[in-house]
Length: 307
Image 1 (cartoon, rainbow, N blue to C red):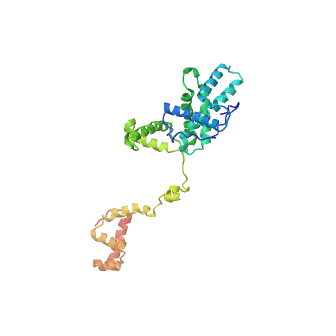
Image 2: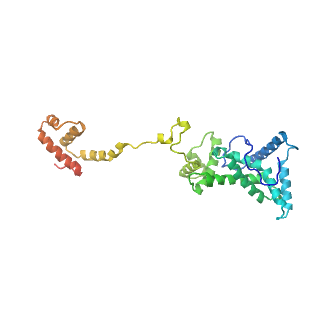
Image 3: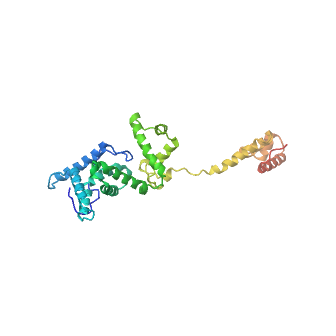
């Protein structure tokens, strides 16, 4: 690794493998911090093996020395910016390690690394080496927090209330714990019972956790055989407008006497003519016509049938 006097390159020049994608809502264990240190050392050894001069650099030792030098310099010393820039560049692999935890978010890794570098710079400015804490242990939560804040405030297409965002951290943590305990994905009632919160809040958090991007209705879906979401949406049934009318007619028909109800059924449901109805019922066609006119008048007005 080369230490330069100036602003470090925050681009993603190498991809660090953290051993699998980890959900970025969990905490930072000692094993994770140790893994971050291992990634840094592996990158240093890779640079040495690629032909760079000198032995592999002990990043932790170099970081400690640089912080000691930074503490010795007065606030207005020109050398402070050079030492600070060196600290940033030495610890860039730590940012790359943190960024790999967000590979599933479909956000350019270069952008994530740049945001994480801001967290690294904040950690460097706030770090106190006299407190006896290793810098990676202190810096990793700050870097992850800056990246999470970026996804929370700038990446989501839909606005999610802050309360749900904070509750989502607890829900996702409970999901991981219950998955390990039961050997399967936990159900909503199990998550709610574990956190002692209403099931409605759990469902709202699960929806909020997926609200990072909106899909176009016209975009083709690969897993759906190339069909767009619009092709799979329901259509408006023209018969729905007649449902209310049918229900009203049914309500009025049951109020008709048996003979008049049969006339209506033969005329409008069996599609018989007035002549055929008169033959069927044994009455004149004129009488059938008068009865139909009176029935239709009653049905249109919606009044109860009166003998």
